[in-house]
Image 1 (cartoon, rainbow, N blue to C red):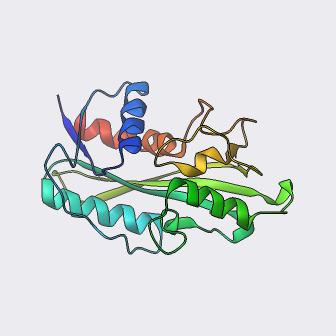
Image 2 (cartoon, rainbow, N blue to C red):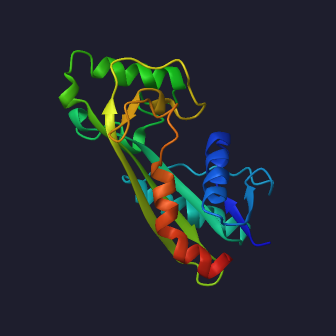
Length: 198
């Protein structure tokens, strides 16, 4: 069975990719940084999701020398001119907790009417293969809006899903079984994944 490194330590992200590949009937052995005893951490200094995804794919591919998938993702709120964007996890200037991030978003939108609470979850996936060592990127976007309060169900590592309602649903993303931005990106990457790994 072909192997693919999911270059993250985020357990929620690993679980999501496992579910996405299963749903798309792609049979691969997904390995994590922990599986390969890779402890090196790469600082995300890019100004865009794409820059960070490319940098992470190159960094962890060079350490592993095996097919590598990385991503960078976050929330972009229309009213806040795209904030927090690439700074989603470090919005207050440091690595914040899930609860803090939800509260910051809700506080910044306090009193903002529903029609101005538009937002999107964006993910850029980077893929690097030993065959050519280029990094290919694929983007997924899920449009929706920010609710006025959070729902009780919080998915660890994904705080914004507890305040985000997809435009295709009236349910919070954390409780709705709907297509995510990461799945959209992987669907776009399928021809390349099948070429090198299937």
